[in-house]
Length: 143
Length: 143
DNA sequence: ATAAATGCAAAAAATTTGCATGTGG
DNA sequence: CCACATGCAAATTTTTTGCATTTAT
Image 1 (cartoon, rainbow over the protein chains, first blue to last red):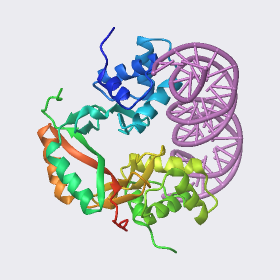
Image 2: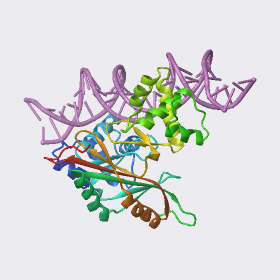
Image 3: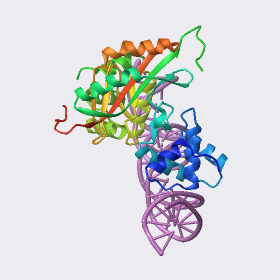
Image 4: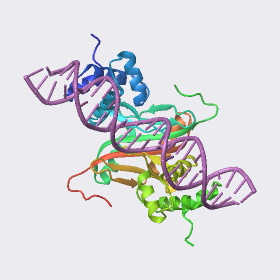
């Protein structure tokens, strides 16, 4: 049997019943290096196992989101996109021309964000940092 | 005649044809201190002038967004929410319990964000900083 | 066994669009 | 005047749901 994905481990830790479908979605998410939308997740899931419906994908991402396992993003383009939350602290830089999403570490800013929240009387639960930029001439697109 | 709203001025600057409906939406947006969704914008617009349809509100926010006059946000809860872009540099703190959105200045971080983008080979076009927090016990909700 | 998950298709929401009509420049 | 904006309702798109059936524990 294939080894458990990180996402699946988190699901189990949260006491979720692990069905075949959820395992497939978990694996697809764990393997994604991009930020797929539901339609794309569904496509990838079906490729692994046709015995899954889009309704289940919707139900699953919603569930994982509520459990804090998944993060939902809106990078423009109309549809919600997802990525595992345990991806470590990070922020996004979106290329406004191509829509490509880069990630970068923001460990140094996390404390600062927490401090801001504290100042306003809040305990920081999570954060989102998104920079929208235009690739500078002469620069190679970072891979 | 009522004085022109800031948003309307921007529309004119962009060469947009100013119709009664657009003027109303512009004014509603200019007066909003919150981050209304389309439904809410429509409600407020209709209150000012019933001769407006929701389709026009959709068309208008899309147009203003494309022109960079409006910003679209996804604070969770499923629907897109809007605010004027010329609102100055700012970031949001969302109360995860109530969904309330606070704004705070982030001038001190803007330079840092720009530096990060530069490091990655990008010219910073805009950014988005969203903190999600839980109100700490004993703290009064900031106004 | 049994409470919960799934598929399917229908329903509900959210947004866009075609077209006849109205209107700003 | 006339290109473009609007209203309206229909069409799309996105997401949720009801219910009979299957499945994990």
